[in-house]
Amino acid sequence: MAVNVHFTGQTTENLSRIELLAWVNRTLLAEFKKVEELCTGAAYCQLMDVLFPGCLQLKRVKFCTNVEHDFLNNLRIFQNALVQMKVSKAVPIERLSKGRFQDNFEFLQWFKKFFDANYDGKEYDPKGARNNAPMGYGTPNTLRPSQRINTGTGAAVPATRPLKWAGGTNGSTPRLHTEDKIAPGAAEGGGSDGESLTGKGTKQLERISTLNEQIDELTIKIQDAEMSREYYYSKLVLIENFINEQPEDSHDVFCEKVKEIMYATE
Image 1 (cartoon, one colour):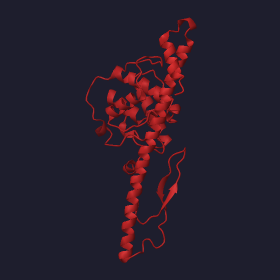
Image 2 (image 1 turned 60 degrees about the vertical axis):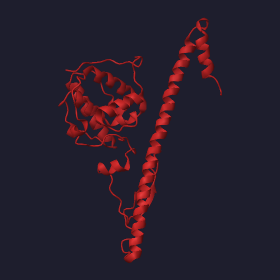
Image 3 (image 1 turned 30 degrees about the vertical axis):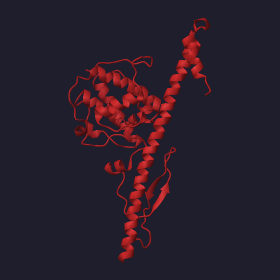
Image 4 (image 1 turned 90 degrees about the vertical axis):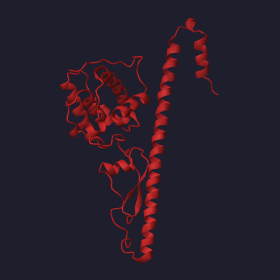
């Protein structure tokens, strides 16, 4: 039976999203870049296996997926494991599966406290336990090209296939995809000209693949910067509210200096 823990947002020992992600990645040897990616539920399933080996079947878990149906399935497996271990916490499956930051961040804070209360320090091989399946970049439109290939969601692009631009949903960065049909005459070019065109096509595809990876990296950095901005802005709002709630006669030099810094325009 597991040790139950209770969590409130007022706890002073809460870790930041960066610290929590570092803990998840370190424990599972994963590559999560955003808290939202934990909406897949895969990380929680394996962390439960770390705590209570055999409490769930890891082979049923989809470790790298961008399909919401798989998210729901993983989260249900996780919920069943909690029930089996007599944990009273209800998993907000529907909310977590939507990939919203606040829902996933608050739940991860609770789970970290639950993990610390139940972990006995035993050794664990996370990659071996999941048969070296990649973990991370699991939310929709965030799988890297290399991971699309590894998970069977993509394949090497033949040099004879032309490319077209296709925009992703939800504001995702456009990516290059292959046409289903081979361009007329592309497969028939023989001799040195055909070989030359094939060589150029291969180089172009390699260049495109490199550029796509760079776009992935830049997109992640932009998202991290936006999340950091929102995170620290929310902290400033809390500080401002706290100071403003204090009686006027209790404002000391320190509070006034803090307000001066916060409201400065330069």
